[in-house]
Image (cartoon, rainbow, N blue to C red; front, side):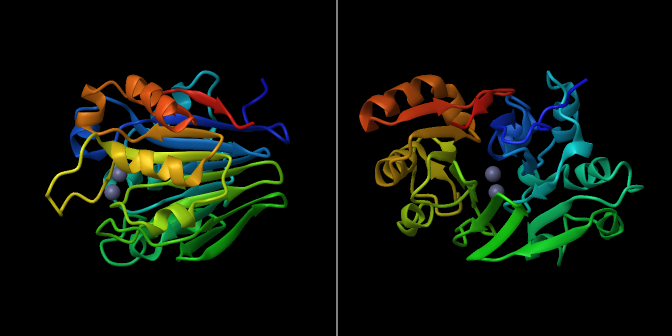
Length: 265
Ligand SMILES: [Zn+2]
Ligand SMILES: [Zn+2]
């Protein structure tokens, strides 16, 4: 049976989860398995949160972890990193076939490491990410990590580039104006939109719906995808919020759903 991602030139995303922040994740109101991206046939899994492996194997058609070329972690919080070790084991067929590359912030490897030392030898390479770093995933696919996010732990978003498409993924962060420039020039913009509204609490370092609107207006992608929803977003029906954002910005805005596949055109 043909497996997904085998064909050269395929470009799509599959949402293995759309949950953001602790409450939605621990109650599993939405799944939290991260994002599988197939870029020119190169398979990349971003932020393998709780349930990632189960979601891969239960996907229709099934997503085979041994087809993965790379695992990427934006930061070490559990909703993003919980299944990283398991996915390293699955990608390398239980550690028996040394394969795949892992890209993580240095903090995920150092103190209180989320990448366990005993699984590190299962993969071909572990690359510590840094601000401004550029990384190659295949002859026609690469990504860079333009800027350090404000999220209380070492955090990077990603700009993936293929000859046909640029995909910016703004992961969890407090809003700051430099984000727009860092992720500009993309065809598709993915935003972790955790909160409906901001408030005075300075300890919650996440983007709000207003922040997402500001970023979409500044960056003007062809398509914007919202994901990583916290409780206030879920209650407000993300699909309705996305429709309103489309009208306000003139950009196609889509609220991701668990299991949603999105073609990158
Ligand atoms: Zn986080
Ligand atoms: Zn998060």
